[in-house]
Image (cartoon, rainbow, N blue to C red; front, side, top):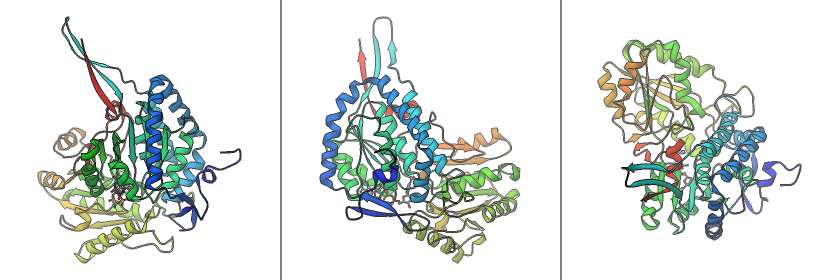
Length: 469
Ligand code: NDP
């Protein structure tokens, strides 16, 4: 990149060479992403394999130093990255959105750099001793989604690089520019071919996961694609971390003070306009507070500003793409047709742009409705009434998904007891979806397997080796 060139100018290719990427809110073209092919992939994986031994030989201290320099550089370019992300993904700059996501990129990069991982002594009896060491695996394939494209890419690449692996990243076709921009910053600091990005479609992703020279696949996306990756990994025996979304339940316990949880509850559902793997997707509320919860959420939904991401007032944005817009519309229409009560929203907002859908609260709805049983991945939350906590726990667990869950109560100890009975990789009390780079995160059941973040995340991109003497 030459002085005075923006990151977008540095990553975008010409109109004839590339694929037009629209602004999620206005649908105007932002730039052109390269169209890479299977032949490009072959070259990238070969070069990543060749670059890996020297990268590994640099050692943890030097790799950590480089990752910390990358985190500094992300911070120095934060506003430009956030604007590009906001335009491409649609999320507003403010709130828990684009600036927040870019901030998380530097935080998670730094955490991967600075988390200690020493060999573990697992047995010692005076005469003999066994230690577990963690070595690099080789080449990691990182395949990401379109909802938090920069942050999830960092979750995949930063620990992988720290552990001495080289990485080839495949972003979602919907959000390649955000990931190209992030990789552009990383590559100002990394040796050549340690990190590359293949801007191709699902077929390129499939070729990547089946490639014999891939040692580990970090994947975040749909359960359906996750299943295909499991199948293709039977050939290369690549290690897998699969984060496959969820249909997270929340349970509000009897007698909860609604005003105390209202804002957290709303953002637990509507963070990133509902397009978040671990956001609250079906809310079970005890009879004693049901009407108050529904009314409070409806008031918040009606008053939270929705609009173009670059407008400073916006805290909610559009759906990122037409497919997702259609899913959300059809799930709400189905709920309405079943007799559910639409308390706020319930329709598109075309005056804002083609992919905007109003923040929607749906009451008097039951399990069995599609909006409850399927992941909506958008700004529409079903609120389900219950009268018996055991029954709410049973219904919350009656899902093939198991990413996150939450329990809401004035009595935190009582909430923890309920949390112990919920089937999910993470359960939050009086919040939903809060993540910390040192706290392991991952799903169970059809939400996937493997943990990210902290020491567990570093181990997940390493090969354990036992040395006994
Ligand atoms: P996908 O699972 O189709 O896509 C995720 C990533 O996988 C993309 O980079 C995609 O590339 C790639 N991919 C597609 N097919 C293959 C394949 N056969 N082998 C390897 N990689 C492949 O998710 P979608 O974006 O289509 O979203 C579908 C649904 O998934 C949403 O409605 C939502 O419910 C859920 N979802 C969950 C997310 C989460 O955070 N867990 C994030 C996004 C979506 P390409 O885009 O080029 O096709």
